[in-house]
Figure 1 (cartoon, rainbow, N blue to C red):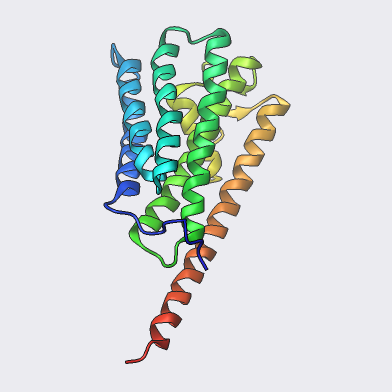
Figure 2: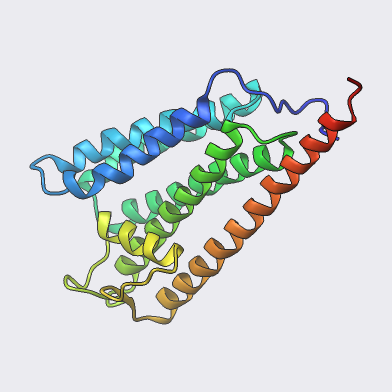
Length: 225
């Protein structure tokens, strides 16, 4: 039974719009890096994702306000760190940004677990969490590469931007092409955790969706004709 004060129905399609913004960010990332003002275009797309995350996870007025108050300084910091890609400012931004990603995933996961039936928004939430896992680990890899030089072996011996996202998603999906390899203990630990998390998440998500579908079918069949 769902708590009376927790809404499971959403107006509109906020999670769908969030997923769309997230996918646009992912698809455009490799192309905008080569542009003269690529980092600023990336910041615009990131701001769009942050903005879309507010209605996606704010199912109540209180959570909507809390998410907005959390997302606003993140968006400001994203633009601020464009000109301070090293040092304490970048490190602080990375930690807060990863915390926000974890917050958004937790809210979406709560929505999935408390949903009474499988809807398109539930499916979109599940996909969004999977992509956010890739983004979370990409940020963790980039942070580790700067904190511990030589943590990854690749052509540039650095890991940031789309390259970090590419390595993260290939690790999350256990594709592992081998062109980028974790070299330091902490990098290897992160890669192992991501591979395990990606596998377990898909298993749990599919189990949850199947159980919801079966429960909804049994509920419909038990109703009087």
